[in-house]
Length: 181
Image (cartoon, rainbow, N blue to C red; front, side, top):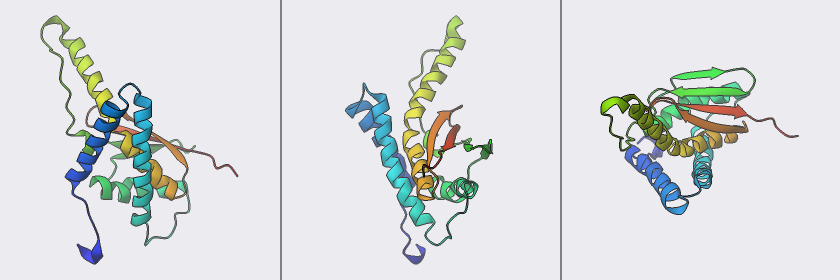
């Protein structure tokens, strides 16, 4: 490792995210999914703050929101997820959409499938897809927190949400908040 850099095995980060979901969504708050999601997102937020501090230590501060978002899409994403974001969209009014067509933390998700035989085949397939998307959504609380924490550290107050399009693809929606002065 060059210059005393420290790294964590990818399997450890995968396991952390899986255990966060199992602990908060299934054991601590099984009847309160919103509370579980907020707790997991808060942990991701703290980690994102620290990672952004580490990854930008040798860089000058960014001058605008777009530079910060581009840093998240390229450098931050490459450090955390070992690839860049596949697509970045914006409406130039403070809304950014980061699209990852093969999000690493969703590639290993599986859900017990409903039987897909007979005349109900199409409805069972649709139900399986809906169940998989719902299950996958629980694993996006932590990365939403990571993104929000990193952007907050870079001076971009924001709200981050995510949606699963088709596994393992997902989109992260970033709404830049107005600063109160």
